[in-house]
Amino acid sequence: MEVQYPRTILRIKAMFIDAVLILILFIALSYLFDTIGPIQDWVKILIYVWVFYFYEPYWVGFNGGTIGHKLMGIEVRMEDDRSRKIGFLNSLLRFVIKASLGWISFIVSYTREDSRCIHDLVCNTAVYYKKDVTD
Image (tube, rainbow, N blue to C red):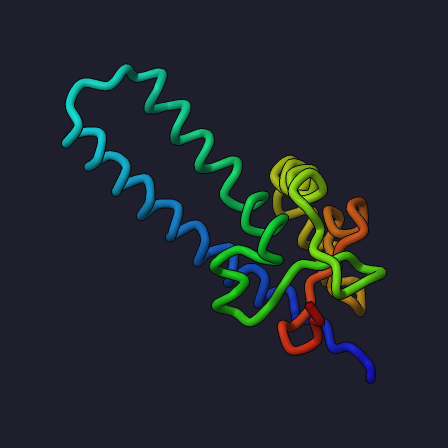
């Protein structure tokens, strides 16, 4: 069975869903901080940074994809073994590369049949439709 890789636009839609979810989480945290009372600014900043930088690596590393990925019906797996989730450390590296390169990483995917981005190529990962993934 030949694998059909999700188009890059589907990945971008998942990314926007996740951005909205993170924004909602930030708003909820702000209300929570106001409800609790005085909290040092450095603690608030630390929590916001932690949420922003570990949302994607956590979900992708341990669950195969973020909430946005799940809603779009796609998952991130090892390129050479679709049954393997990529793990937290590989997911963290993938996120750092993706965040560092920004849209440049995604532009490369439009030139490839498998729609892999630079961060996928470096980390030996690929995005698959959920139906093509075995657990």
